[in-house]
Image (cartoon, rainbow, N blue to C red; front, side, top):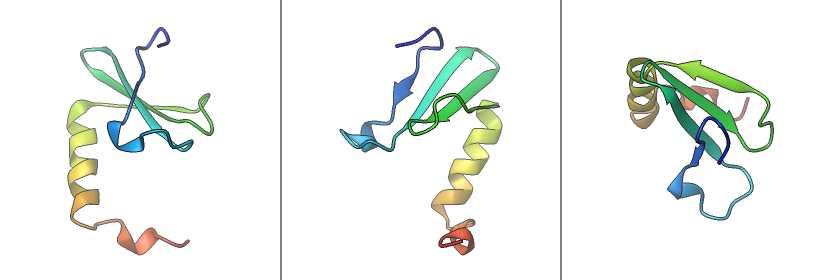
Length: 66
């Protein structure tokens, strides 16, 4: 683990393309992708929750294949 305490999704298994999440402070969630680990997105728990719920119900399906 790094200073941020990155955790890999358990869904990723041994795959090379993984999403990592860290919560270095109570108000911030950091997200990175294994293929470009220097790019780090920062959000809040609330915004991440909204995004995940929207993805689960297909709100972004129209973007697939672009």
